[in-house]
Image 1: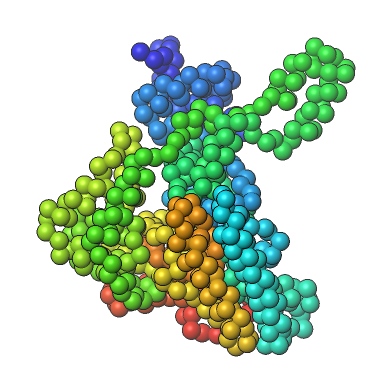
Image 2 (image 1 turned 180 degrees about the vertical axis):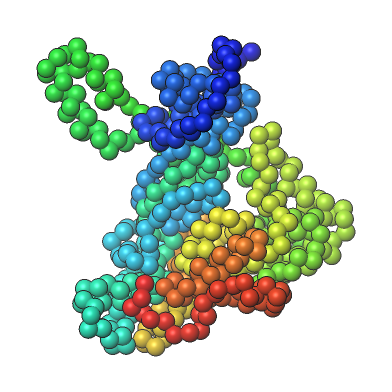
Length: 525
């Protein structure tokens, strides 16, 4: 039997204790802190007493027993780690942040110029022709991005006068940001970005496993680097100062300096135990493959039906039909409504076969796929540009089922670009990118076919299913429809409100949504 974390406690009479003590904790390694907090369940020791006696070695022994052998996964919720993740593609960033328990910030395509950010080049092996085609297309998109940004900026200066009380620098910075709102539609998914995240170790383990299971080589490599960073030495912002101080102490007293080195210059490994077994998830990979085949067999090459930007699908089907439809939705490009109508027509045995595919390869410790998170009253099937979707992607209270990238749905044209006389240049750039996507995507090499997705610009439409409760629908509609927001997701938020208003008119009075059809002050951000 493993060593218990309980501590022997002397029996003493209970006495009143009316003074609550609250203090913040700083300086403990994440896994040590998780162990100390877990001890509350089986020990009467205070946090200060626990932390003073716990070493990283004891924490590792405890976690190996209770986390891995006994499966007490909630312990990992107590270990939080901050990561900086730099020079990854927008495609990889979308995969990285696709966690419901995630906190972080990324470089904004609305406020920063991405011309000098660089871009990701996949490994095309010996196929130099495809590599050259890919590189030319990315460079052309960045050239168009720069031209459209400059063109929109000059156009906006002719349309929006600078208020007397506004400084020229603020005026130009604001209009630049508005120009980036339009130009960002041309940024390819290969564009490099950077982000920071703070996650608990359980989310981190799930995140790494999911990344390692990706069909994209870059994303798999990202999972490996994330695991290595979690298990390796963390970067200490005060490392140089501490090393200098330790040297000064050693010069005065070598013995004391040796003691100081153990504290001041020691390496801290944030979660070397909790994520060491994170690995690709066969359940997810095998299940997605088989479900994709099932979706193809069910739809048999049927044409994708036209759909509105936002479709609030009424909740009339059974839970079995909803789950089966959602399983197929994730691995296809059809709308939820179109798939649901076909699934609903299946007999019970056929429908149960689809449900069984969703769990056939589930291992002992695997959570069910996200597609099984069903039963919400509001299901919004959204078809919008990738750039705007990335803003909607931040709403963690939703259950989001995201389809893969494709040029099949076409692309969005941002507001104002036609008026600025830039529409032909814009359309030419995206049409060329779509042609390149299709050409590279027809490669016989699976990795090369996946690499084609990197040339898709953020204007490309992507389909995602957002399942939520009423309160979240109100929150999104109110927040995302505000005038300082991007026109793309403002329209989606407005259509969400309109859809609820049509289906549940009595509830529409609870919304404080901004009418997106009203004129916008372009100098207000």
